[in-house]
Length: 396
Image (cartoon, rainbow, N blue to C red; front, side, top):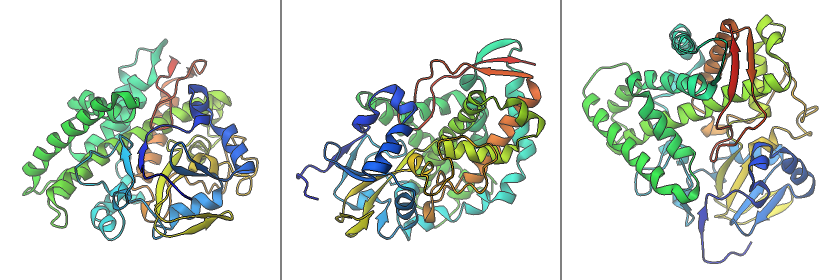
C-alpha cells in the first residue's frame, strides 16, 4: 500500500463512528465490515481496520509480526495515547521484548488471581463506605457516586496513595481519556502533573521496604527512575478507567435485559455474566499495532511499518466464533472473548478488574432492592468505550 510522506496519525475516529450514537453502538458497522471488508485500508486516517476474530486474535497474540512499540517506527501519534507523554519514557503498553518483560514481570505476581483474591474483604469495605454516602430513595449520578471512585480508590490503595486525593486522581484520569483533540493541552498538563507527583514519590520510596506497588517498583534495580514513574502513571490511569466502564456497562446491560433480580437471587452467576458484559460491551473496543514485516490477513497483503487498528468489539461478535453473537447471553460458556487482549500484552489487571466488578455488583445488589439506571440519553466517552453519566434511582 503506497502512502504519502505524511506519517502523522491523529486520534480521530473512522468516519462511520463520527457521531455519538454510532460510538455508543458501533456494532452494526462492525457486522457490515466483517461481511463486506474485514480488512480495510482507511486512506484518510492512514491505517488498516481489522474486524474478524481470527485476524484480531492473530494481531494480539503475535508480537513479533505485530508490535505495540510504535515508537520504533516512523509513525507519529499526535495526542493519540492517554498513557503517553511525548518526549518521555514509553509505557509498558507500548513496548516490545525484552523491554516489555523487564518492565512488567516484577509486578505480575501481585496481579495473580490468588493474590488479588486476598484483597476481597478490603475492597468490599471500600465499596461499602462509598455506598454509605448515597442517599437512599433518590436518583444519583452513579458514576460520580460509586462506579468511578470505587476502582480509582482500589488502585490508589494498591499503589500506596492516599485516598483523600481521589479528586486529583480522577481529574488526571478524565483529562487523559475524555478530551477532544482540540483540548490536547489539558491532557498534556495532566500527564506532566502526574509525572511530577509520582517522580517525588518514587524518590521518597526508593530505599524503603513498603509493600505497595510504588515501593516495589522504586526498589527494582531493573527499572530506571523514568521507567518507574511511567509504570506508576500507567497503572493509575489504566487501572481505573476501564474498570469504571466495565462496572457501568454491567449495570447498563442488566437494565437493558432486565437481569437485576436474577443476578441478585443467584439464578444467573455473577462471574459468568460479567464475562458476557466483557464480550458484549468491552471497555477497550480496539487496539493498535504496527506490522514489522509484510503480512497477509484475510487474503489481503499489508506492507511492513503499517498501522493497524484491531477491533476487539467486532471480534467479540464474530459469528464464526460465537453463537448468536449479537445476543446478550448471561450464562454464555465458553466465552473466549478478546477483551483483555492476548499474548505478552494480555491485560496485567484482568483479574483485578473482574474482582472489582464482582464486588461492585454484589454490594449494589445487597444494598438496594431497586436499581433503575436511566439509559435514555447516554453519551459516549471519547478514548475508551463507556458512558459519561449514568443517572440511577436506588431504593434500599
